[in-house]
Image (tube, rainbow, N blue to C red; front, top):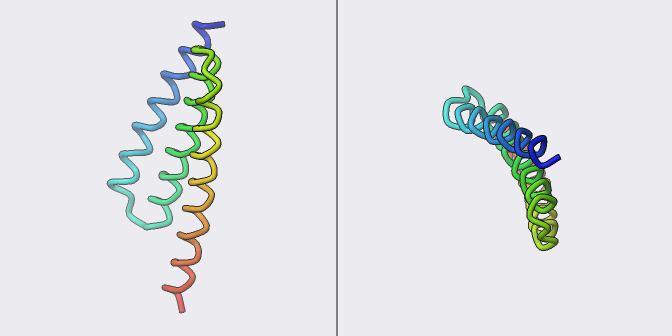
Amino acid sequence: MTMFLSLILVALLLSILAGLIRVFRGPAPAERMLAAQLLGTSAVAILLILSQLMDLRALLDVALVFALLAAVTLVAFVVLAERGMR
């Protein structure tokens, strides 16, 4: 099970790398925001897996905070984008 979770961690890290490339090179702000959401989701997944592997329950709280911050960031982006379209 540990090897399987480690492989998932590597895949998530590669996903973060691909997302960083899109954040820096994305042609539109919406695409950059979606890539940033991918980074947040991947970070939450990595923290959850590390919590399981290392048996640290505190990482669950950190993952919850990251998930909430990602949701707030998305709402802020949508509100700002809506103001810019008017």
